[in-house]
Image 1 (cartoon, chains in turn brown, purple):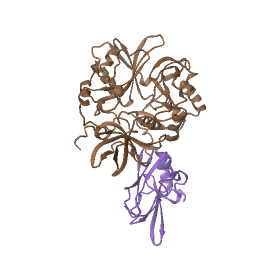
Image 2: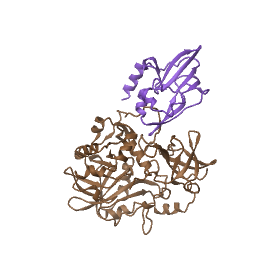
Image 3: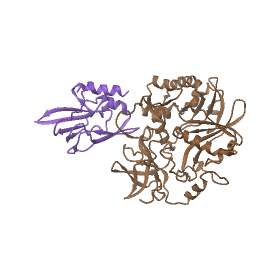
Image 4: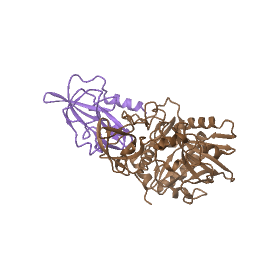
Length: 404
Length: 130
């Protein structure tokens, strides 16, 4: 098919984003870490080992992919609390003059003028509109009341984004400090998550609006607390110094365990975010994807703004043949994985970017990029899984929404 | 069956070879180590009886929540029986991987490949992978 402009997972992209997610087709048992390789370790690494975490390489880090069972960790997060060590995510702190205005020239979403306390999900694009990363930009104040900006980026893109920012700020009075390796980030997710943090924190997470945050003290230690997450559940995330991470983790873990929760690994994080319809860089997002294709309209603000990649996004919006991020539900239990082709009759009309048989929905679901003529809800398509066609129906994304 | 009665492939399949009506029949499954490593199994795709299989080549797949894994035949021959109850009862692989959890039976053709290991050698391979 000539119209497959989107090639999200071409061979050139593979291998850039860690080995766990991009290699679904593997031999049985290839899950142990290559011990010869120098991997980065989070401040909680030893805890994971002591708690039977299966450590795998992810974007140059040794990370727990699971502790017990993926299904159990997933359900625990949906029903009570899942605790995730996400210290591998890049944490960049900005100082200097007009930081918000500078970031605003590089993000698809407005950052300038965003009030203190707010957190914005945004894409960053290159000149041709290719997505460099999806990021969270935090505008917070420190304990002394001084405002600052920081950004959380994907582990696989950290070096790229730091370089990109450094190249763009030449001649501008802005300093970037990458505190990823000296700090920790803990996601506490689930319907009971905020309760587990409440009594440890000077600020009750429930008092924060969704996608806001604050600098506070947790277990007496300076930390950033935010009402954010990547699971589709309520909850919060904590950023603290690496030296304080274990203390905070232990205190929250004790409360989480008492409430029927526990630690959860990268695999459960992946099935949770898939059900919640959240894109993952390296799968749904890449430098060969244009934001106009992502169906993330809230994260793209064009009016009255100028930013790197803007004209390419405007151009892409006029192209009615560009494949758009969509949801598919397959019959049966077989999962469509990344790169499976989607057909309408004999015509290739899309490609799967993520898929799994997921624990909460107990269905085989996929995110796929699909031609706009074939992505109306209820449309029947077929997915080629290793040479066999399977019926699939176009469904709403997110696949799962938490009960209110 | 106990694992000591079996031979193992590097790719974690086991085989039990026995004479039956003058034919050599190999029963094939996957090891307890493999089942433990895969966890959260949701799906298994199996071939039909009558399919020819080649040692080292895929004859089916097993899928967990996280990933899809190939099943490789340790033996050359033709599939004579398939455990059709297994895909709907994958927990059998956890409870009895070397018995009720058998996957296919093969009428063996030619010699048994030399690279298959006994249980002790196989366990050693698994231990070294950690």
